[in-house]
Length: 188
Image (cartoon, rainbow, N blue to C red; front, side, top):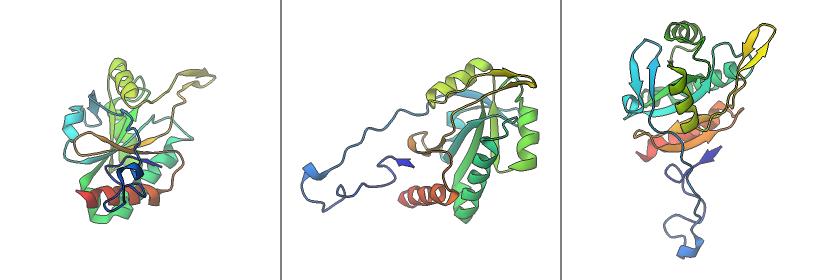
């Protein structure tokens, strides 16, 4: 798990830690930004649609059989661990396969398997822009059954004003995601 200092304070850098030379400074990656997509109900959304909520953002596709199912299950479990605090968090599943993942496909898939997660799709150019903003890599690979779309597998934690807070590698434990969320939610 990677965390930026807005949610946690590195050892030796908090109040009373002594001299300023003891401060640990880490660059905060530029992750996230503006997007214009369509949610699984067919509504146009932007990053501003989710301001005021913490976001767990994961990129994948509904035909994924290896990476996405356990990642989405971890997000669900992390939300379960939060209890009532989960009301302050939105989970977003952004497709890397807009050709197949229409709003209707996303809605049916998530309603059946992960009803607390909102699916986002849109035109290929807008998906590419969102992928670039989140440093997500994917590519279409033809195979005998049509095609598949291998992709990077990070879950991003974004703050209530769209700011990057942390990312979680795959596979991370749902308890770690929940702990990071609880830490951030307690700070605000």
